[in-house]
Length: 101
Image 1 (cartoon, rainbow, N blue to C red):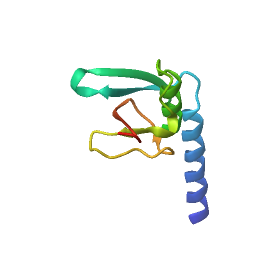
Image 2 (cartoon, one colour; image 1 turned 30 degrees about the horizontal axis):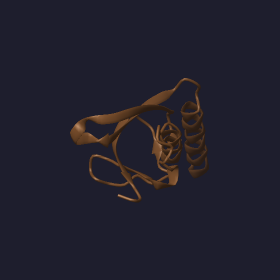
Image 3 (cartoon, rainbow, N blue to C red; image 1 turned 90 degrees about the horizontal axis):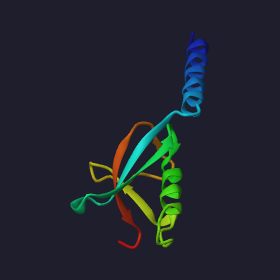
């Protein structure tokens, strides 16, 4: 029935969320500050974390203290900008772009 299917899908969603929150379940986010110079940093973030979380970590680790999370834009290999609420579910590489660039 439709109700059973909805319940099954809801349970699958709950299980996926629990797995995303499992301690120690992290993925690597490689952020290229300057790809041409191979200048990059790698962050370990929890699987399923929103991009906003990785941006906050990157800003916190900025040695100059000038980078703000709200100014960070992650650009994927297809040149698409990642939204703040998009989940990071696997190890991935991004190019760094900032609002001032």
